Image (cartoon, rainbow, N blue to C red; front, top):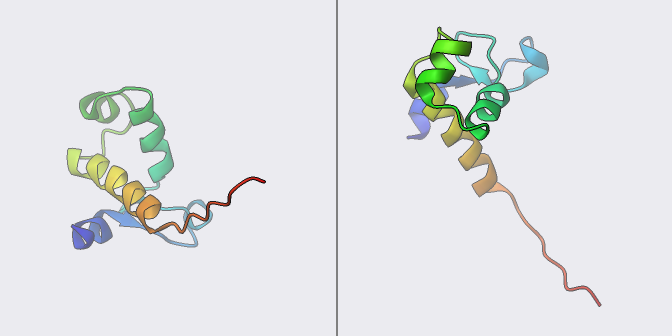
Amino acid sequence: MRSKIKQRIQIDPNVHFGKPCVAGTRIPVMNVLELVREGMTFEQIIQDYYPDLEREDVRACIQYAMEIVASEDIHVTVAQ
């Protein structure tokens, strides 16, 4: 799965200040994720906002976010 994400999500310091974008576009992953959060279907996102995207691009945005969260180190401390 990681190789598919690398093909669909790119980080370029010259595009949106290096924020991850859908490859070959200037569409930030965050923008796509915000639409998913609002409950939009993949079809609505593509039809109403980003007609250059494919369903797999939206899936790659979600997978990218999941991998970022999975790789975070979380340190929990006990309140005293």
